[in-house]
Amino acid sequence: MAITSYPFDSQAVTETDYSRLFREFQSTGVADGVGGTSLYTYADGTGMTVKVNSGFAIVRGHAIYSTATEVLTIAASGTASRVDRVVLKLDPAANSITLAVKTGAAGSTPPALTQTDTGIYEMTLARVTVGANVTSISAASVQGERKFIGNTVGGWTTDTRPDSPRVGRLGFNQSTSAWEFWNGTAWSDMAPTVSWSSLTGKPSTFAPATHSHDWADINAKPTTFAPSAHTHAWGEISGKPTTFPPSTHSHDWGSITSKPSTFTPSSHSHSQYLEGGDTIAWANGSKQPHARSVSGSGTYYAVWVRGDGGFCKNTSSLRFKQNVRDHDVNADAVLNLRPVVYDRLPDEEGGDYARDEFGLVAEEVHEHLPEIVTRDEDGRIDTVRYDLLGVALLPVVQRQAKQIEDLEARLARLEAKLS
Image (cartoon, rainbow, N blue to C red; front, top):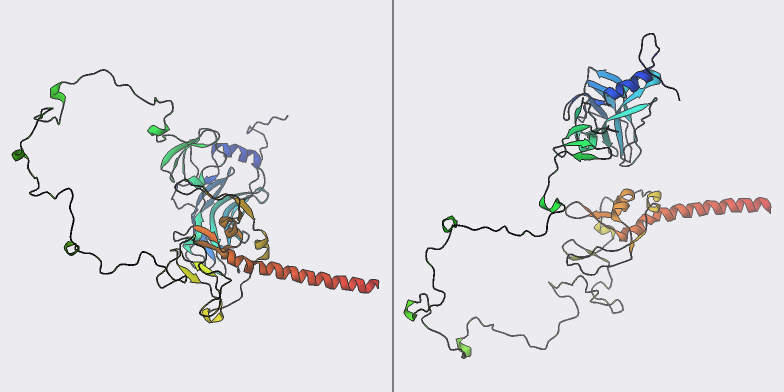
C-alpha cells in the first residue's frame, strides 16, 4: 500500500492533495451563523428568478468568495410542479466553483446532490418550489438549506447538521435550543431533561425514617378539640328545619305543579320514513330497503356524509355544475396505487377493532393521485374518495383499449400478409 505525505519543499502537490488536507481543517459549509445572510438565497416575486447574497464558503477543501448579489434563472415548470435546488458546484476539471440551479423532476422531491471525493461535488444552498404554470417565484417558495462551518463549535438547525461529523463534534441546535454532540452514531443532547419517570433502578417504595416532631413545630393544628364521645342538647343545634314531612305521605293531583298537559300513549309507533328533523344513527343501516318502491322523484341516490354526520344526496347533473373542463389523470399514477390489508386501531375505550380490512392508505394515494384524497378540518389527510376511484381508472381503461385496438390492427395486417 502506497504512503503519501505532503506538503514538503520541492514536492509536487495536487489540488486533490490540498483539498483532502484542507477539508480536515474545515468542513464544507458557508462562513456565517444560522440566520446570517452570507450566500443567502431568496426570491422577491420579480419573474422566474432567485437571488443569492454575497459571501464566502468552503466546498470540499476549496474556497469560493462572492462580492455581489447574483441572480439565477429558474426554468418554467409547465403544467406540473417540481422542486429545484440552488447549489455551489465544485468542478476540479474546470478549476471552478460556480452557482447553479439543479432542476428537479415533476413532483415534490428535490433532485439528489452529486458529491464525489475527487470529481463533481455539489453543496446545497436552498430548495425552490416551482408551482405549475407560475410566472414568478415568491419568497415563500424558497427554503434555505445552507450548512455552516465553524472551528471546534458549530451552529446549525436539525435539517442542516454537518454531514459525516467526527466523533465529539459540538454545536448549538437552533431548532431544539439545545447543545448537542456527535457520539459516533447519533446526535446526543449534552444536557437532557431528566424526569422522575425516566430514572432507572429507583425503588418502588420508600420506608420513612424514624423521627419525631415537637408540638411547637406542628402548624395548622386546631385550637380546641371536641371530646371523642359527647352529646348536644336540641337547643344547641343550629340550622335545623322548622318542620319535617312524614316518612309516609301522599299528594293530591291538584297540588302537583309543572306537570305536563298531555301524555303520549305507552304503546305507539312511528312512520318508517324519515320525518323533518329525524336523524339516522351512523350504524343504523338503511331505513328503506331497495326492494321497496320509492317516493318523490322515484330515484335512489348515493349519499355523502358531512363531517358533522349530516346526510346529503350525491348529484351529478350538469345543472348543478359550472366551469366544467377536462382533467388529465396520469394513468401510471393510478397503476402505482397499492392495495393493502390492515387492522383498525382500537377505540379510546380499548374495545374490539376490525381486522384484515381491504383498501388503500390515504397518504400513499396522495403521493400519486391527490385528487381523490380529502382532509379533515385540521388540514390532515383523512380519507380516500373511493367513489371517484372508478373515474380515475377511466384513463387506464382508455389507454388499454387503445393498445388493444392498435394490437388488433397490427395483427390484422400480419394476417393479411400471411394469407
